[in-house]
Length: 180
Image 1 (cartoon, helix red, strand yellow):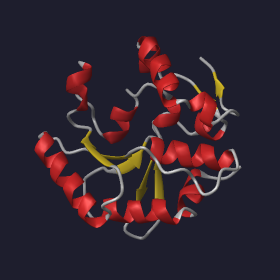
Image 2: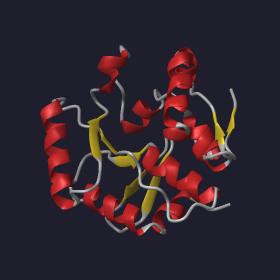
Image 3: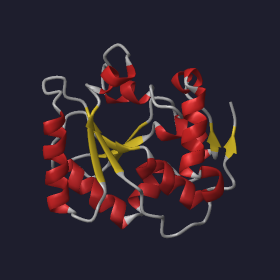
Image 4: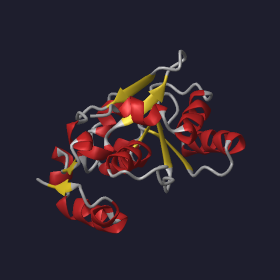
């Protein structure tokens, strides 16, 4: 079974995007969601090269600046580095507000409030070029081609089902089993 870090490390486009994100020096950062999930599932389905992501979710945690303007500044910096990449930068220190939740402790904690386990996996490129996998809910579902709601996703079942349908995961990755 391939490791997530190995799958990402073998993708030169993904590595270039990780280097760009690392250059911002954001606190507690990673690139998560479809950036990781899609590459892993494409690899496990024999799709090469991996399909480009709809967006590149750069997460970070900075409780000292909760402004949307700062996120936009970071996106602008990334667009200057890689203008064709679909960057989306979000400070996880403010994500609890629109979900009406208690404040998150860090980026990994915020990811536990996503709808499905396979999306709550990120990677960070360290200064020594090692890849760190950030997976507060584990990686078994992602690597095992299983999609299930998180505990939070079970409380928002309609949103979970609508998201899977809208993103066409059943069509794109037919080997994935959808379980509860």
